[in-house]
Image (cartoon, rainbow, N blue to C red; front, side, top):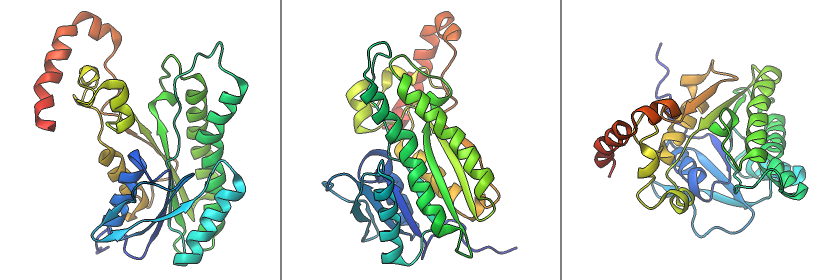
Length: 272
């Protein structure tokens, strides 16, 4: 069966929340390069916009933690381009915080950004996609914290675990017209990661990742391209792990710490 180029998104419309920086920026550029019309949102005017092949994303100011703002974002995209094919719920994140002393307001804000906002945006997208002949695709960008929390991430980990549960629930309710999938991301080489792990892209942590390096934003973006397209037309309710195999068990590192570091060092030069 000839299905043409399954990664050709010409004529399709994609909304990427938080698409003005970090992983979202690269996701937006990847869909632009595949031919899609792309809308990105954020709370403030960005310094630059994703672009590819002399085409640029459209920016719309929106705080998707507000359900009405999320609805307006989707409506504006449809008004401009006539349809909506893909929603990537990428906006999220959290600083570390001590669970014993963190304020209720902090917890509310983290849950709102990482769980409620994707819910609101997905609801708005579904109202459009369910009436389209081709339906649509919702992709939620999650975190390995949903499966393996780290100290200081209680509110964030709980919200991301909720996002995974939400993905599976929506996949049940909205199929077959709207597919809903989840991407579990691990450590990713971004500007924010550099502030924590150093400008070398996390050389210190590369030794605990089986693939020998942190993920690049394009690793996540290419997974989104797959999930949104025809190659994944029967993939629904999936949790796709993009974390390089997770992290090596602590007992392995305790027993062979030098070997882990040496293996990472051998892989790392090829990335530069």
